[in-house]
Image 1 (cartoon, each protein chain N blue to C red):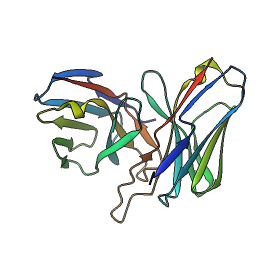
Image 2: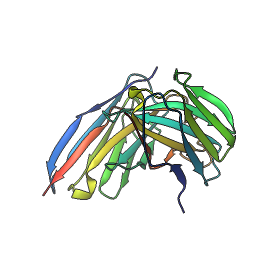
Image 3: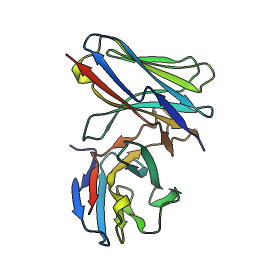
Length: 116
Length: 112
């Protein structure tokens, strides 16, 4: 069973379009994240949600809107796509460290977005 | 904000050789996580270090966190082609692991 699953895995679209990436985790974790990995493989946090509430928003353009319908899902919607949005987007989940838990992130396999 | 610098940026080693990757933080770390990313795939958790001077091993990979908790090293003994990938260190600057900041990554290639 896949712990953190993202769809779609690949997405090719034109500039100006709107697209969504979906993420689901079956680990029972309270916290979910979106990370962006650019062409240089630099991984940067975008958003973090805890129990459906936004807790981290790292100065991401307003065109990016995360939505968490429940704590097992965190979707990412992007409006008016730009060339610079091309990247691999990773969803992740975790549980707060403690009681034997390390707090490590469990990552999805990534969604490669290409904007033409 | 916390910044992590990894060195080297890339590394090519012959199979069977040992290697070390370093991760230096601009601030004291509450926790340091090591991940491996295979090309075109997601990140796989390797290990987490929390205490100054702590050392952990998993198969042929050993990671250490220095006493001051600002630097970590990842050492691979007798490298194999399966070790190839991108190694990323992630820093917990809050103590709650709610926001991991990742290093610049080290790309490892292992030649036959």
